[in-house]
Length: 491
Image (cartoon, rainbow, N blue to C red; front, side, top):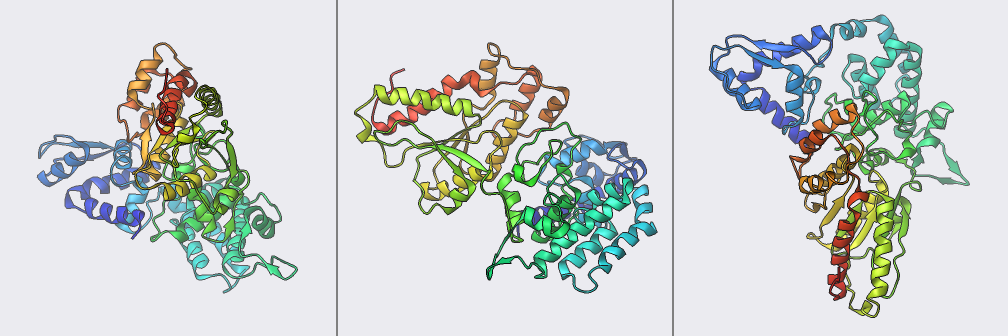
């Protein structure tokens, strides 16, 4: 059972307790009538059982007989920050087995044009579609397959475009899973296919399956549902934001537009792996990682590796620690300082350890190349190899740290990336103010290594960039190198 399935089972067991029954039923009704997550579920004359369940979940202290008012937005926020990473609609499906739909959605699903859309798409293939694609289409038609939100929103504004997007996605799935791909050259048939090539075969447009295109999102949702153990209608709502958030992690090769964001639990590499599980090769050249590993008698020169090179490497060096910075300017400054320090300490290179630290630069959100390099390096560096990460004190930098902490929980260590550092530097080096939308997003972040950091930054309302404390990072980095070189660091 994977992590998603375990969370689903925990949620079912927890929220099927009788004390939640009336509150949840009122929430479903409120959502259907308001057609959004809003308003309140009012539990009048609450029973002892209801008070116990609701109080424990929210940390409240209601008494039997009192009226409990539960904000749907507050409930969804608490739910997201709990051990149950679901939204209200997803919880409804887990508990009830049916999608939670608004009144207008119910009317739309009864619309003959909606049904005709699926009849038309199926008519092109007859009985040739794979079992998975047929079942995915059926779930979409019933309103709860992954990708349904994307399709419904497009159908409500432009039914013709919705049909075109669905046709292209189904055609791509047909090519992948029914052996209708005739891509071969000189008798050589490729085992995988690049996404733009698949898009051209499915639609004639090599960009039709980019993430920013509806067909591209429908394809991805279908592949993601295929990989999951159950069919919870997640629909990746976090991917479709109001346009105010920044891109946190996604390879540009997938055509992610600037008004989309990726939740922390889905990083660049994880998304690529979903495509690869279906035989879709990605752009493994544009994804880069910058790495410097100290070597005896050699001045600092970083290696720049593509994802393709990282995955093809047969040997990886064992490292004592990985030091990761977000910004190229900081990375280069550390190399400049290291170069001068090595020249100053010339003659001690023979004392360099066989397992020196490595310095990495992600140049923004961690690319697939960076994540794969870290993953492979840890496999050769041992279970105790720490990952020291330092980023900008802004939403993107924090989100990137959260992604690394989530992917490498046993190795992640914040590097000058906590409330203490922020508070000590911000008075003398205040950065630009947070935009209102960014400040709101900051307030929603849960930072596992420092639960006070987000509220502290929200209070000051200003960003802090790595360049403002690069001297402290350099001090830590040289200290790590000096220990390995057997040279006492002189500061």
